[in-house]
Image 1: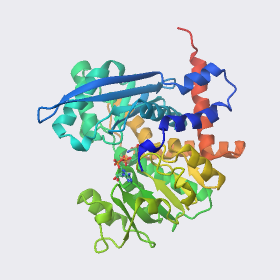
Image 2: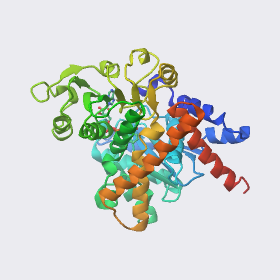
Image 3: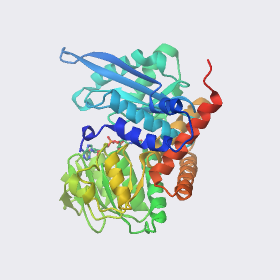
Image 4: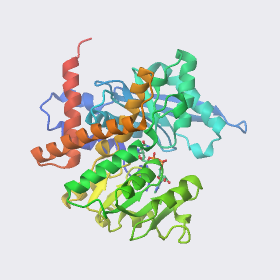
Length: 421
Ligand code: NAD
């Protein structure tokens, strides 16, 4: 599974176009909503530790800021390009709108493999990227966050580089470590939100979460937290995997032990053998087609695509990753009556708590974890309820309903603000 098997911009566009066609608006407004506000591409020469010069490319796509400052992650991945960033930036506009937080959509990053760079090289590269885009980002302009290949460490470097130019603005970046203005609850926010959504989706499909069987592809931040929260709710997480392959136990895996072996001891999922966690090895392809109630793709995009969709047996698919189901696979699942909860709803816990981090930074306060997760639950509940209501009013899929709500809110704001300068 790689992200090159589909073009995320085309998939994001096709979901969007379907929703825009339902709104009675001028063609030019549709065009505005489909195209990014700004795409920035900067060259980033890096003197490697061995003296060699390597030139990387940094991207920042700002899709829409009608409802508030641009918001979205920075991804460090060798396949990142402008098209990927544009597709993912558009997705952020609809995600923040559906979550009803006062922010827009952005995405970007650097086309590097962070695993091949030393910490010193990554710090120099990150800080150089910030200096090249500094004029375009900031607490009321564009607020970056972690994404694939980046985390709290990189956000701290971003904060430091920005501070060197403009002074202290902890609200210019989210996903920071707790000690420099990060939010309690941010690390587990996306997985926590996904566990709420999975619970509600099961209820909607009349599946009891207690005993429901779950397969999760990807056992990083998102996959491992959603696995823990779901097994706490009584669900049977029967299969999980990472890039090296997966493990399966039809009676449910011991998730706490798996987290200990992988995230604390540093092993890959599949090397956790029967002696440590009672499980048999399976491939990532087998995980995706396992006979389960719920499948949660939580790795990269295009996990479920034209070539494997016919073999998917889950009754519910929860999109934890961004665009893990390609557009043609989405049509096939929908025709078979599989209930798919789209990324812009399912994984929005992360951006909701990012927004709360920004709010706390602007207040100069730090909230308790309980307050953060309680706000997250209310916000997500509102988004879920609005989507389910729209599904029944329009007799449509969860994805279409979510896009209809998200686009409608952005259109309304755009019309209120006008187009005169
Ligand atoms: P991560 O880097 O912590 O974990 C990714 C996991 O996927 C790892 O276990 C990795 O081994 C696995 N993986 C990578 N390539 C794979 C492959 N080819 N096959 C199977 N597994 C593979 O990333 P994360 O933060 O957990 O994010 C996972 C996904 O969720 C990404 O698509 C990300 O954009 C999306 N997402 C994350 C957040 C967040 O808050 N972290 C929020 C919204 C969306």
